[in-house]
Image (cartoon, rainbow, N blue to C red; front, top):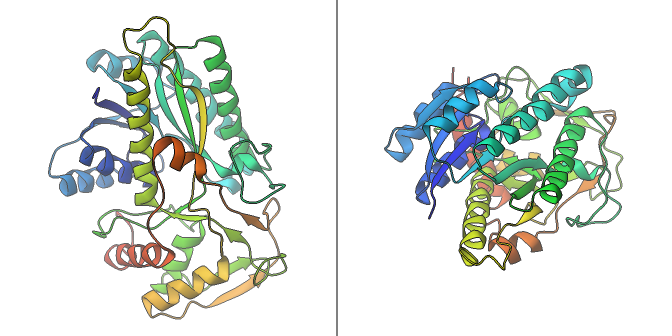
Length: 351
């Protein structure tokens, strides 16, 4: 196995969990992160959990000179690209920042990868690229559209990857479209550590449960769903991390199949794959499950719908199973238990 991987944004929530899964699968990792929305402490804890040091380089994906120094020093099989800003509300307020970081940064990364002939990439995409879905469950052929600059930045990168694969057939580019990552490592040592007020539902619920926030605001209770609240496909972050390992294993296998056979194309091209559970859970169902696990009341209030929010969203997961041999294993109860363990052990996150 060609096993050295560059992990951009590897100190972040999903990146840090994926570093553990990569190490367990035998991959050697180098983490590159500017720490704008992550913590060096996360990497320290990952290193402690795996019992081995991790090479960490502080750097920005928009800095081509810094990236070249990293590629000069290592021979990478491929890159897992997590580095990106991810708050929907902030993207509406600061669209140029999101396009500059998420789109321009990815272009710079791809240019440097091209220079060093490293043409295997697993990209951290999002189910937001589907917009308001016409049918459920959502499969990878569904129409794509976006309602905010964050989602549009992910979709723009997907278009760039598609065009790149057409222009140069030696590229293998897997775009993993995540649904709603939640949970934490079962050790309670690493988890989601949002800056300020959480943008995502699960950390908001857990901070209410631990008494850090007064009550949960639920945006809309008049959707055509089981209880009027939005329905989402929540996936445990450790299952998601395994999905990245499966994607790399798939690339390695495809490239090995036809190695040395000049008559066969052994690259993958552009391949989008959903990572979800295939099941929808409503906001109120998640609140109830978390309350049961934590044995804490979760006070909440209903407020108006947010612009751009949709009623229901859950994945068709057959591609992940058929191509990658991957499927989510952990339940909503597991997600709540691990989140609560992280939250009570780290009420102020990594600080």
